[in-house]
Image (cartoon, rainbow, N blue to C red; front, side, top):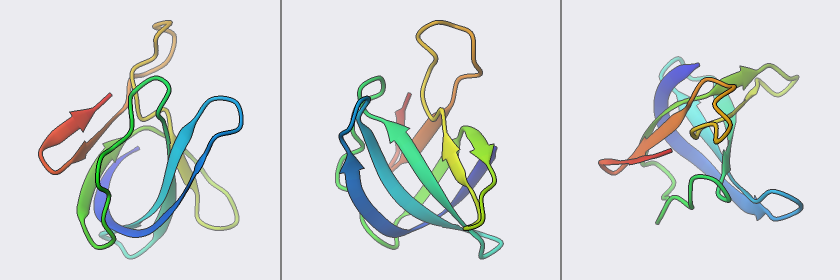
Length: 93
């Protein structure tokens, strides 16, 4: 999934196992998705702010809350499509 929108909610990082930064994005179609960004592989996105524009590409998984996006980074093993996040002019992979 490739999309853009605005950060609606910033959640605490998930630090169990592989660490993930988590936030909810309201897409341009007004639906929301949870973005789960692996910060062990890609590094943490600095200074996320509610209302800020963000673009991303990753794997979408539907759930009863709308869905989630993960794999927003390069696959270190080269077996999965690479994703990315663009925020404030910087690309995180």
